[in-house]
Image (tube, rainbow, N blue to C red):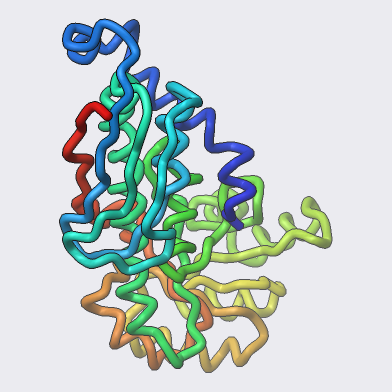
Length: 284
């Protein structure tokens, strides 16, 4: 589960990596117009209505460049901000503000876009008891922030990485020789604390997964009627996850299938950014 503590423990390395990508030796554009320290401030503006996520990452980007930079917020993560709202004021050395601007906005826009898309689908699932989960289809080196954004938007996190849980997909099943064999191998290998999820594509695989004692059964890209039959066969003996091309546009037809979880890779791999801008930088 991704929370603020996890973000603080692991976020700095990711932010520093992004800053190093953008600044290999110096910020030529800023240093040519500013020869030394000059106090200034700029405003973070919301140019598109949406859910804000990643404000702490935004601020940390600047303080890693210069710990004297101060960010005053007028919004918080999870808030649905209206277009035109002033979200924050950044104050400090204008060289640090200029150098960190693009990286800070890249994080905040990406995370806010994911939170906005997640919130839209969560609202469509209200009252159903169905959890909306993300997947591992994340941007390389951005998983921590993208999965945090899903939680801010009201979704839940699937396994964070390969060490979190056993998830037997088609190739694992093929390597083991079948669903029952794969689950048996998992039970022999794993701790009693480790959950086992199995990806199924046919009703026969569903039956095998139930019989072998899977904790979670994923119904992957099945037709609706097949999924309903699968839920009937599972009969509460395992959690049921629906996956495969889940979007806001088709979520309505999935609500009545009977699943416990609907997972969507699109939350992290296809959500558009939220339009935000750092404007009006001036000396103070």
